[in-house]
Image 1 (cartoon, each protein chain N blue to C red):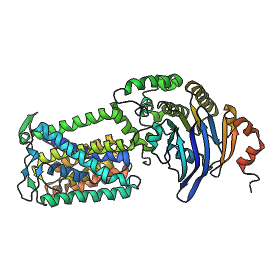
Image 2: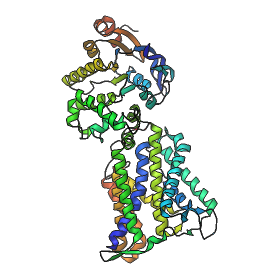
Image 3: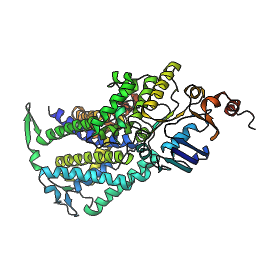
Image 4: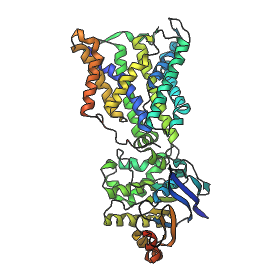
Length: 300
Length: 244
């Protein structure tokens, strides 16, 4: 039972991350490698700038009903800002150029944090009430894990409803499939792309909250590992397919957790190597991803 | 007052010039066929007007606005609706969703659904087959049905001018007949201005209206479709006899 919850909560993180990447890839064919650094930025946005080992929690002391919207807004804001200041200039560039621009942007954000906070990981306690265990079907599960899973499910349901039921969601889906055609029908390119960045940034904020409360540390590299797995999940899921990204995110979480349990103790240190091996196998047999995205048409 | 006016418009792709200094005007309510052989620059001309490929030179006016170099969505919002070559349905969206994409631009979020509902009924009345299959994926439709879908989708934006690139491409002749039948009925109903690109002049001669012939990026003939279609000059110009 414990394993199931571990797998689901790890998978939730990967799925949220993969969604953030797939959303942006869907509308502008950009693989946004700065996404992980946006996650880290959201965590540090809760602290007061200092180079001490002990974090001076600032916004992180807000009650949860303010803390959550604050973090999501920071993520969305930074993400939209990066679109307006950086990616808009590269809209007609080829995907490789945009990808490199996103790497550069990620480094800028990371070194900005480094300057303010130093590279030393800081301990923080976010939402401390959530670390108590609860008993579910005879297993003691940390409340946070349960909440992570529930939040992810809520995000998925909410996002699906948004994409299916609202006008803006419809415009985003149309733009993701054929951007030029959507524009010829009056869909505003800038608004759709901004919207995708805002959603993606808010997802980064959600990951930041979960990661921050799970690990109890703030580390400028903390987004990077999630980002890597999330990126792999988007590739396995089929670039640009939102459903594929989510499924692959959960699958990766499950594979990683199961390997942690079944691998002989000596091999556990190399768990990630086995996970990546599984990824390579998937890509050999389904190079287009599990659910291939339909509209891999040219942008703009 | 003309609805659309091009003066000296050129389109280039890198070093290749697709359209060379084209000028013409189109009045409200007119039907204009642009014909010509493959590679004459017909599609490039449409893409330039729609704002997809901004012109390299010249000026385009539509509905009393200078639209040269404007974004496609701005041009669409002025009432220019484009049905591009190859139809370009949103295959993963349902038929109804395809139709609704273009309705967002005129209404506020609040009034959106109510307004769209009446437009939807109008399009479904014209193309009953779309209503039958409204909740199935657009990618599953046949070619003729997709052509009707994209024309319906263009109408949903309540346009003043509809530009259609090769409506007969890939369709059986009797399906093409149906598509044209609907287009002509729609034109009478809504006082639409039509700009239709077709490779051959036969359709233009059947439907009537004005016809322009393009060759090598230039307009070589412009006149009444039926009169032009039967003239020697048309054949000579189309196939390029006696030009050199």
